[in-house]
Image 1: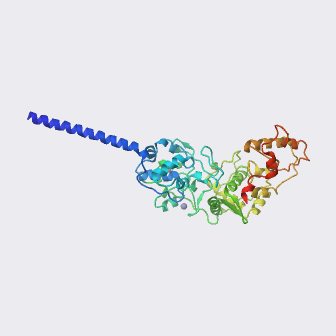
Image 2 (image 1 turned 90 degrees about the horizontal axis):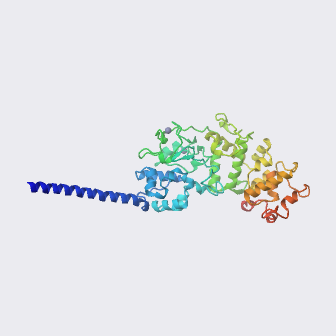
Image 3 (image 1 turned 30 degrees about the vertical axis):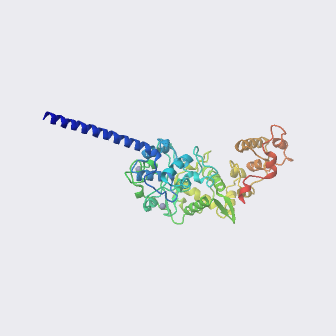
Length: 438
Ligand SMILES: [Zn+2]
Ligand SMILES: [Zn+2]
């Protein structure tokens, strides 16, 4: 019996220890497996949808792997551990991250890049910078992983229609104020509790997207229809077309879209922030129901404008650029806009714009030599060079060496006053943009 007891206790202890060893071995396996994930590919391949935002795709990939997006990134992409979701990853995704995602997902780097906001570089603006605010891109205002800015918009009807709901890249843009498929306004926050959308927290189990705070399923949210006959929807369609084709087309001529958007940005300031709005919204039926207030600001930050007012701004502005330059010129003369208002802060004037604004308010202004000196200093600092023609354009006056004493010396002082590249620019071209327009 004793021996039996001892043998059974030995068996018991042997069993325990072997189970213990086995569990340790398993733990190591799990541990090494977990830590190996950074070298492994994703288990399931999830194709990005048409025009899907990169961050929306990463969240969907994580949820298919039954993992919280934050944990998923920590396991599979440890180099971005606790960092990735604190950034605006649709702008900040660099080549290293895209390479890693491409390796793990089996989807090409180039395709993933096309799902970032960075891919709008050269179309929406010359550069897209992850460190600053980018014109026409709604900012997220990250505080840790939580987003405080109303930078992610959505159409509940589009989400409802999707077999797998996802967020569109275009919904991040300031002029995406309504859905051109469903003719309804987009939402930029939870309609129930008002919380901005934080994609990496917008899930409940496998359900995506829901409000990160009250868990409202965004597919069930209501969005208001846009009144029939409103021009704003047509304006959005035209803006999408310019962005997608990279070209602004007018009277059988073409201009690069990023130059068009640069001028458009100037007009957001002139109208919404400086108050030149006479005749701007005469065509728009929604002026009755949406309050359009002018808020004077020094900076031209489109993000600050509430979504419905943005709808009106772009409806008005696209009407101005319809039938260019007739509507544009009538608006400028109705609002007594001067050359300086139209060109201030545009370092490189597109030719198609310069040739039209040139017709407005030229001459008749007395030249102040101090003002010229300031303009030279400003332009030289801003772009590293300047020339007489460019200074003329910015000031809205024709600079004639023969008529103003001391003017020639400012441009050709023969010594320290000589501007870099002066001779070449004076004789070659008015503005560098001319080279690229035709
Ligand atoms: Zn829609
Ligand atoms: Zn909510």
